[in-house]
Image (cartoon, rainbow, N blue to C red):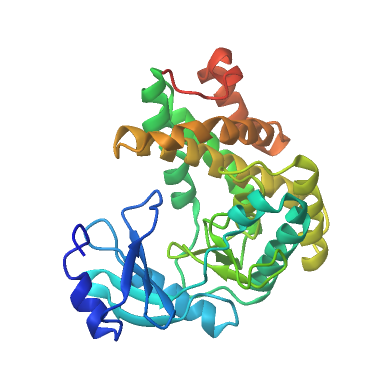
Length: 329
């Protein structure tokens, strides 16, 4: 087991999986590491290592317990050593929604319909015991754009004006998100497992440790304005209609809030992807910025984003916007 984290063998043995084959899995944009354990009889489990100071598995365990208690499909927890960062869970298999659709593009509508229906089911349950997705969090996330992207592109911008524009634009939304729903915050095709390997299969949820109580449109934006794969505009519209029908939502406010949270999330992601390159040495995410930027521009066109759109017009040169935010080589 050379090259594996210290303490892995001891934890695996305590969990009853001594002798299992340990296979590292590709990492994500965090400091977490994942491994698949395989016993001689073919049984498998997933091992997560989320050590301090950068990670802490306690929130994952907290949210997983709440999701399971409320009838949603989080992985079963098999063993934990939270202080050391170890969590052993049920293995949902290899059928991520993203990978499935790469191989079965004709199943796109079915897969997205199931994902939207799973969100509707989540939102029918009273929100969990999680912190609020309040203005301070929205603004702090949006500020990643001016903190990381703008310096990387060589722009000196009006950061105070940016913050003020977001406060003005988001203020009406905050009044409309009460009492709120559980927001998983990273609900997209790479974090949805198709249990049983079918497009309409039950949705296995992963990467939910940052859950907050906020607006129901946020996870829809995460799903339908996906940073990692193209979602056709027509499909986005159909799935928004599907969600609204399932939740009996009428009026124009929801469309405004969807655009607001789309712009907020996409601005945040541009900042995060830049930070992953500049701070963490992970340049592969830079290639995704153009897709995110395209969605950001579409969101900014909504009248609800007028204060933020004016800031972009005044601070981000047209050449950069026409290049969809690409950083210079």
